Amino acid sequence: MTAGNFDQVLQALRQRKPFQMFTVELTGGHRFEVDHPGAIVIRDGVAVFLAPGGSPIWFDHLSVSQIEGAPANPSGEPI
Image (cartoon, rainbow, N blue to C red; front, side, top):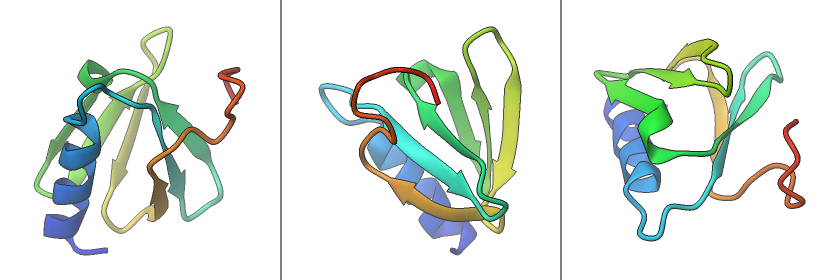
């Protein structure tokens, strides 16, 4: 994924009205759900997600395997 495409996709998902959770999967298999539009900052192919509890997850356009426009766990329970 290019840095520009990474930024564009994440910004579009972040700005959906109404906001809907989405899932990011990293190349190592780690997955997390972005559950709030203010919990993620994106710039120049790099992003940081503040997970519940304030733990930051840093990732970039090279470390993303896929971005899904829906939560990984439809029940809403954290994964």
